[in-house]
Length: 299
Image (cartoon, rainbow, N blue to C red; front, side, top):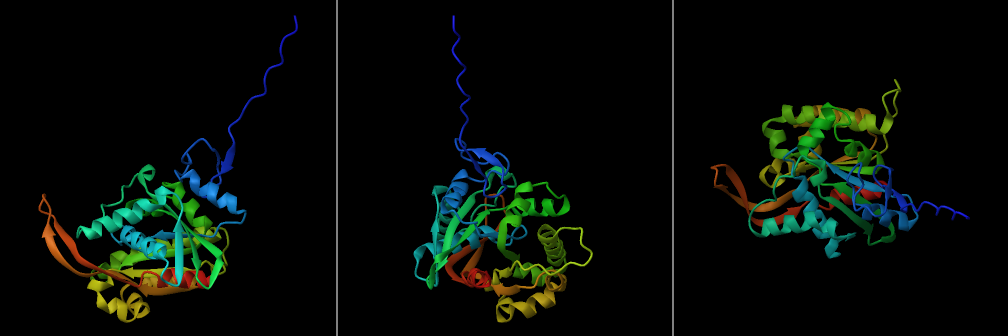
C-alpha cells in the first residue's frame, strides 16, 4: 500500500511591522509586539518606498491628544498649504474624539497608560506645492505617564523607542503655562527627553558625538492662556526651560520653537467629584500647522 505524501505545511502570509520590524502574520489586525495596526504596515509596504515617519511626544498634560486631533482635522480639510489623508478607520478615532469633545465644550479623556489601549494614527501628508512627496504621520497617541516611565526605565514600553527610531522628524510638546509657573519640573523632564532622543538616534558608545540631524519642532502648547510664549517662543523657552535649550544645542543641529493654542476662551467648572475643569467655550486654533510645515521643509 502506497502512503500519500504529506501535504506541505501552509503558512500564513507575513509582513514586517512598519514600526518595530517584527514579522507578523497578515491574519492579525495588530502587531503582537508593539500593537501597531497591521493596516499601517500594509499601506507603507504597498508604496514600495521607505516610510518617513513623524511622531508626536510630550509629558502628561501637554495637550498631545487635542493637538493631534486638531492637526488631523485641519489636514483633512485640504484648504491649507498641507493636506493629509488618514488611512483606515483607526486613524480617525483621535480626530473624531477631539472634535466631538470640543463641540461639547470639554476636552478629550486622558489617554490610558496601557499600550494596548493607545489609539494609533496614520496620515499621509503632502504639501500642495509638492503633492508627490508623501510624509507619514505614524504615531500612537502616547500617554505622558508611559513616556515618563520609558525615560526612567528604558524598554518599559519598547514601542516608544521603536517608533522614535523610525522617525525622521519629531513634534515635541510642552505646556507653556506649566513652563512659566513650574519651569524647573518641566525643564527636568525636557532634559531627560532630549537626552533619551539623542541616545536613541546616536547610541551611547561614541564619546565624541556628532549632532543629530533629525529635526525637532518644539511646541509650547496652551499659549492662549500664556501669551508671553507666543510673543517669542525661543526666548520664552530659554527663560523658562534653559536645560531644554542647552540640550537641543548640544545634541541636535536642527530645531525650532513654536507656540500653539486651541481655545479662544474658556470657563472654569467642576465635575461630579468636585474637581476643577477647564471648559472651552469656543475653538480658535493657531500655531497648529506651522511646526509640521517646518519639519517637512527640513526633510
